[in-house]
Image 1 (cartoon, helix red, strand yellow):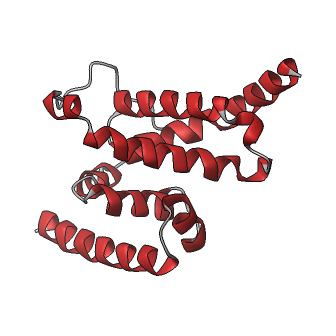
Image 2 (image 1 turned 120 degrees about the vertical axis):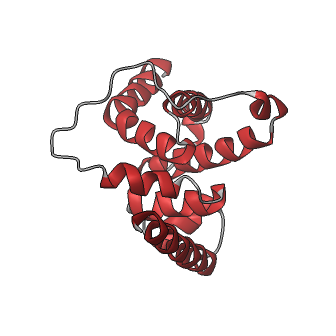
Length: 165
């Protein structure tokens, strides 16, 4: 029984870990924090693995864990004392297509959004979830997703317009 459980969980991780790490990065904006967030979220998922009845909704379940855990991290006092740097010690990632810097510029502006608005934008546009799926993951209404998206996109358009000038 435990062997089957571990095999199922391992198979899930092998299939989804890279995408979940991407989501964690988009939520946190920092590779190291994203790795920590994903590790904590996967540990919580493993503990609840037997309770996850609908295997089709595991992605939604773990995204919900990541959003909640990311929000909890912002409330912790030690988090405010940590200092981050602008330079990353690792080498730059390899991109298999031409990158004119637009994506990085847009992402820099997305990171200026409040964390709830950023979570909506990440889930809605980077993860390409529907409004209903985004609402379910965040535990908010579809109308709230729509209004948050509308405000966030208006803010992004305004800020990107200022950056382009």
